[in-house]
Image 1 (cartoon, rainbow, N blue to C red):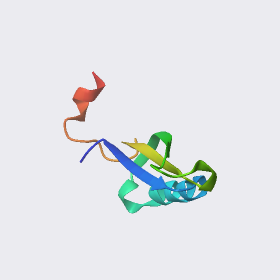
Image 2: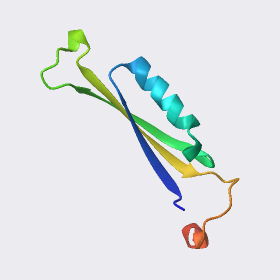
Image 3: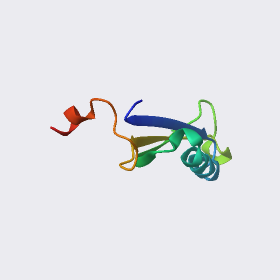
Image 4: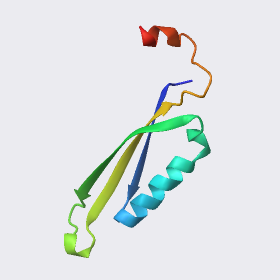
Length: 80
């Protein structure tokens, strides 16, 4: 199993992005992982008008395996 995991969520409004981030944090795939970092990016949609919601929101969530889970094989080399 991997020690790190990245999830990317996308939305067309900040409210939807927040809901999708919360859903990603509660997803069963993330059990045993803790959040290390969340980065947000706002990108104008091609041909879209900002006044009409022409912005695309993306968040990347970096997870790390939590300390309370079983150690990974060969993980001792990571702590040298």
